[in-house]
Image (cartoon, rainbow, N blue to C red; front, side, top):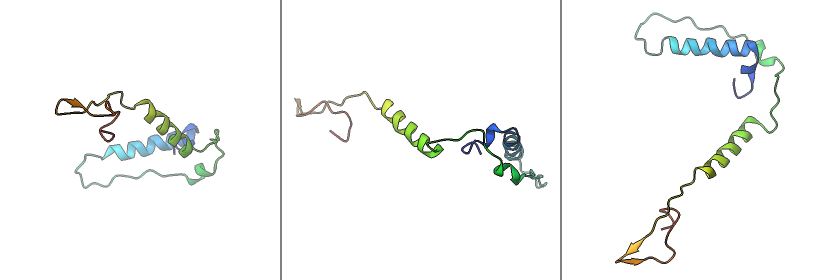
Length: 98
């Protein structure tokens, strides 16, 4: 629901909270008593959304993951020594390069 922005509509937010409460209510219970399931109004998903994502949510998430991955690259360099002689090309950026 969050991916498609239904969470920004009041009815969508209420539904998300209801589902969350339902899931969390009996998460760790061993009771055999049945839990009442929430009623989901399907008309919510035909409502017009307040936000239109261009590019799509998936494309934005992939872009963020790519940019975040480059920010978190290791700044550690690996020096490789063999018999007290530094290996040519050392220091290496990763273990795989070494």
